[in-house]
Image (cartoon, rainbow, N blue to C red):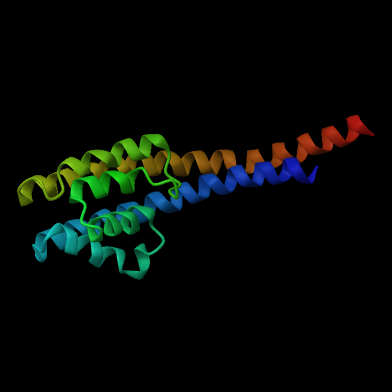
Length: 158
């Protein structure tokens, strides 16, 4: 019973982790837009600056992007690898939403980069709303199903 309840709880925790990471990604994109607009610093320096902030220290996208830039990889390649990070709780669709930024950051003019960030933020915001609705409706159900499946197994085995 404990195993199936734990599986239900694990699934609920994954949904919560995805929602939290989507929220941090949206905040990260807002900060990236501000840094690009107001500092006009090189993209590698912006990546390092954002990754050094406390609120993004646990965000795999920020951390891996900065690491790749520090290793001397082109910004677009470092960003692409950061999106594909295995540490991330993002769903494949979330990653596909963010991935096109790799082709734009540091490769186009300022307005093109800012427009791309705003577009990705809008699309990611929609995915966050969907993930939040899914978490709210399914998390309790997954935990309950886990407990009930465990109880049913215990009764059958008894």
